[in-house]
Image (cartoon, rainbow, N blue to C red; front, top):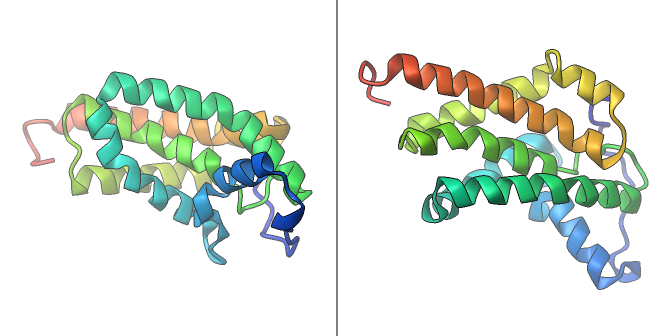
Length: 177
């Protein structure tokens, strides 16, 4: 199920508990998903602000954080969708946070976290997230709730990371990436 266009359902923060305010804020990517145009792209761009944190943590800790982001993301996305009263609103971008972070792992593995590598990782993730080839499209259409919201982006991240990994192996030493 492709993300629904952003609907004009207003969330009244005054009626939300403190906990729901936190969950909603995470679900909309700390506000990055509230951009009127291309909220998924904006959410993916916002993740790039985490690159210094990922580099500071190192690849093992970053991997663990991404797994935790993904597991908690099932609940975050599910609850955010409930608050918004829609299944997979385009403003819910926590799934992009997890998926885009996954694609950065090969850059960390090969110590290639530079502007060109980050640009390639961003482009590959957006390509697979929008195009949705099998199994991404299958997960998008068949899986429901927070798990469904998260899984297509996690798969897009894994596939984009595999393509980036293969590209890095083939070009290391030949191209100044």
